[in-house]
Length: 89
Image (tube, rainbow, N blue to C red):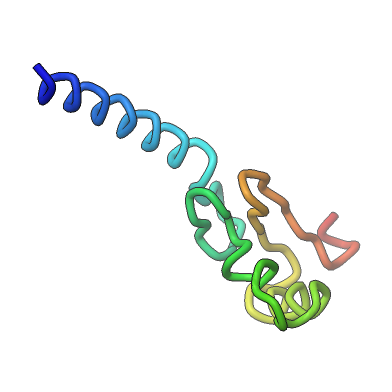
């Protein structure tokens, strides 16, 4: 009985995990960017959570050098599209 209940609960959480991961944390379209993690987005990649890391503008400059004038960034579950050139807006 316990194993059946455990299997059902595990299946439920697996489906919920897959749903949220595929809906909110996948790259959409041709906009370049770092693939996000499930809970943190790109916060760990961008060192926003690490003490002693570079400032936020330095991270944005690095992303611009790496991906160009238009790139996407995930802050948690929020997708942000960064546009660095007025002609692209």
